[in-house]
Image (cartoon, rainbow, N blue to C red; front, top):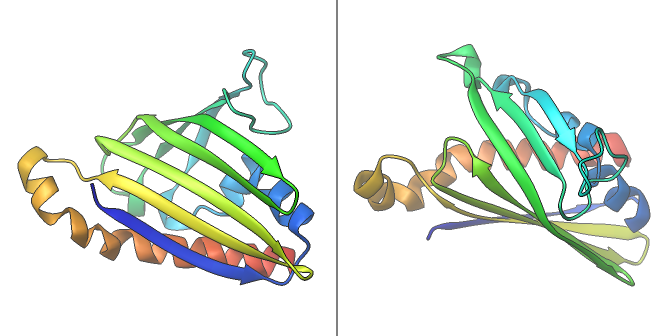
Amino acid sequence: MPTYERSVRVFAPFEDVWQFHSTEQGLVDLTPGWMNIRIEDVRGPDGEPEPDVLDAGSVVESSIRPFGVGPRQQWVSDIVARERTGGSAYFRDVMAEGPFPEWTHTHMFYADDGTTLVRDKVEYELPLGPLGRAVGPLGVVGLDPMFRYRHRQTKELLE
């Protein structure tokens, strides 16, 4: 399965960066406008609506309409892991429903002398079966602009 990875150093405290990425609002703030995201529903691990933190077991239901073209695409993300140990932390979301047959996004955070290293790792499979698998490594063409935007926004909003 193809994998995309990207890192950025944020000149902001680990705690601030970790908390920002742990919320529904962080997701909205880091999604490029051209994706036209709309959050439909957010539930915590026990089914509570609109939790303050997206803990493991939370579900985010959203829809996107890239570039305003075509019908809205449903995107349901399950937060399957969330752990913090000292100066490092991560959470992982898996697409349960959406445009990709497979999508696992691991968000990693590392404290480093008053700054925070943010690493994103996405394992994905493109749609269209055998054709999607054949061109899967080219998915970077679509993923890179989105993650460059996410990292620029993280720096802009937190530094």
